[in-house]
Every structure is written in C-alpha cells, then in structure tokens.
Amino acid sequence: VSDAAADLRARRKQEAACRAATYVEDGMVVGLGTGSTSAFFIDELGRRWREEGLRFSGIPTSDRSAKQAADLGIQLTDFAHHTMLDLAVDGADEVLRGSLALIKGLGGALLREKIVAQAARRFVVIVDDTKLVDKLCMTAPVPVEVTPFGWECAAERLAALGARAPKPRTDRAGQLYRTDGGNIILDCHFAPIDDPQTVFSEIAKIVGVIESGLFLTEANEVLVATDHGVEQLMPQRGR
Ligand code: A5P
Image (cartoon, rainbow, N blue to C red):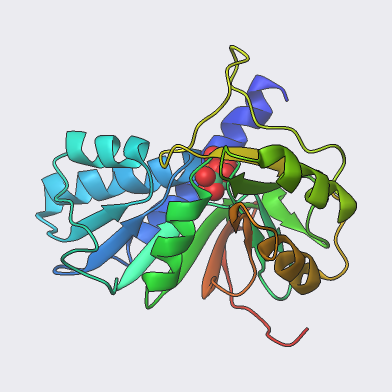
C-alpha cells in the first residue's frame, strides 16, 4: 500500500470515528473499542472532554485503549458499576454488506470487544470502505481465541471445519501472541463463507474455544467513510 493510499485510509477512519464521537452525550457509559479506527474515536472524545467539557464514563475493550483514554483524562468505569452501556463504538476487519455481520479481532481484543458490544444498547461500528465485503473471510481470517491448554486439539477441529492449517498468532518478533486475558489466537483462513451462522455455531462447539471474531448480530449501525462522506448503514436482517 502506497503512503498516499495509507494516508487516505487513515483520514477515512478518522472521519467515521469523528462522526461516531458526535453520538456521545453527557452522562453516558460508553464502550471504547480497540484498533486504529477506535484510537481516532478515543482521541476525538479526549478532545471533546478537554475543549467542550463533555463528561461520560468509558469501558475500554483492551489495556491499550484503557491507557489511551486514561492518558487523555477520560474517566473509566467497569462492569462492577455498570452492566449496561448506552453506546459502544468499535472498528471491524470486515463488514458484510446487507446483514452487517462482522469479522473482528485482528487487533487481538475480540473477547472483550464482544462482551462490551453485547452489553451496549447501541453498538456502532466505524470503518473505511475497504472493509465492506460480499462474503466474510474474503480479506481477513476469522480470529478464534482459545485456551493455551490443548490448543492443538482445537486447531485440528478448526481445520476439519475448513480453516487452512490454523496456527497460534505470533507477534512481529515471532513470540507467541497473548491476549489481555492470557489466551492465544488461532487465525482461521476459511474460503469465503457462505453460511456464517453455521460456521459460528460449529466453532463455538469446540471445547477450548473461548470466542470467535464472528460478530453476526451485534452491529446496530455501521458508519462507513467513503469518497462521498460518511454513510450510515443499518442491518437488513433475515438475509
Ligand atoms: C481489534 O481487536 C479489532 O477487532 C479491531 O476493531 C479491528 O481489527 C479493526 O482494526 P483497525 O481499526 O485498526 O482497522
């Protein structure tokens, strides 16, 4: 990807993020996503906190996002104080046109992201238009978080479902990647998925699987930044 294309993508992510930040109101409990798009969202909330005196509480989906928000002075809270959020905003790796089913978790935070998304009255996804796909798994694998014990068995079962030789994710230095919860991630490259619900259910049946990055029904709205500005997509269910 050229520098110019990367800059354009970053600008788009920021546009979607800034639009979502206008949804935050005083007194809300807000889920703070993880990843480069969510980082723009948190930055913009930091700006509104500082410059506009906006006051809300954030529940972060990762240690990274917690640190970013705390550094900006945003007040954080947790599920011990709130089991229901007014709003959660997060990025995605793929968004399926129509149903708005998602793949999430290339940033590794999928478990906390799904807990936060499901606890939110409204879950808004922010993406640039390169994330829209006609079938899931066209451009991104499905990340599956598993317990370190016996991951080899889970990997075999995922391979039997069609994932190409799933291996534990490693970082740039080649070290085993650990999630904030201390688990490992198997990135599952399936052929483009015709029936996400079946794949989701079959993955969930495997012992040792904690959660998959298939978010099939969580999104209430997707804000997608395009050439022509930010478009708001709502899910068409039952497709
Ligand atoms: C983090 O675990 C992910 O679910 C991210 O939301 C997703 O990977 C999108 O990341 P970017 O906003 O960096 O593209």
